[in-house]
Image (tube, rainbow, N blue to C red; front, side, top):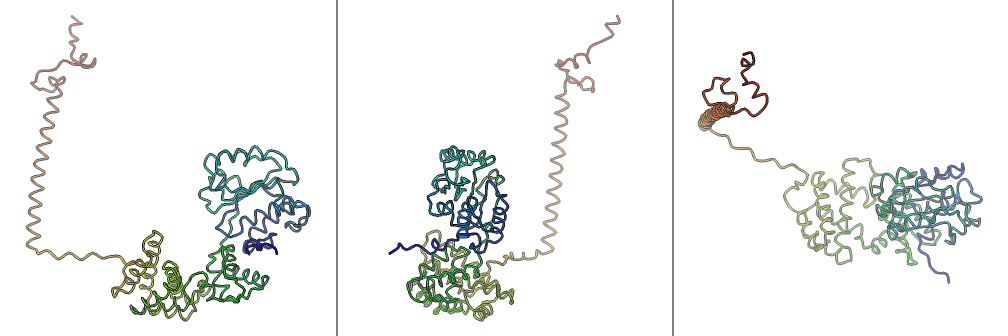
Length: 447
């Protein structure tokens, strides 16, 4: 009996044509392979599970393939097979998270200058390259800028802002998009058919939404839900730990109607059923978001997440009202932030529900207007004005006296020139050459 392999590994793309949702990248790479104009350094950027590592491995085979087909590797020649099974010594896949020191990069640089032993190109795939230290990036700069002809670097990262600009400028950068729910759902249906798994459309849509743009996450969830039986939406929610769709909608409706007894009964049932407070609030936040979008854009069905049917969302939007619904979404966001800080989940959730049930209209998004000042009687205003005028007069007199005293001090201090200004004070001994010349009696020279 063969060892079981996870679905995301078993169905990893083997050619560029099999990569889902990244046609803007795969077509460019295929054109480069077909024309022989491939670069020496690539930088793949994108969120998790979008195909960065898969494309890197396909590209490593394509640049060494003996019989490429329209830019795709044949996966049948000796280089393709050795690279795919991991026996090719000329293809190195490095995890920068655990090999992030300058010594690791120096060893790579010293080894990379040698010609490949079997393949045509020596390829280095550096995953999570943003984890390299500053010294390691500096050590990589020179060989990345002017590598030997036989060398190809493929860097992959989820955090482009942590990669130095000097590295980015030396690579061809490709931005991988977050996969749409439709693309993920179609791939899930295809994989389920190949694995003889009964997967209905609701389950596929729920898995695609939970994948959040990541094909790998969605396939892992499908793998988790597949136990030999049919998979529907409720089965997915049960396995993942989400409240049922009806329970989430019922809880949101009870909050909108301010039915405290029903709110806490439904919350307790979901919590005891295994749905965590953070997960439950995530579902409520999705419902609030969809209801807001539908109230703003009645024809924006393609923007909805699929968390509920359109009629239920319209009813929620009407019962809440747009202002209260927006404040409710803001309240949920703050509560979810408190969950991540390690406070008591249930207590935090119940306090948030009490706040949502409050009779006072939420004011989280409304500016607070200060109370208007009471009018001052005319007689009090006149008296206050006279006091201010008298105070200004006294201040002006004091300032004038201070200026006179300062001028007098300046004239007294200017003793070397006092006899020239008509001052009766005794002149001081001049200290500079100009002062002494100005007081010299030049008539004595004529005598």
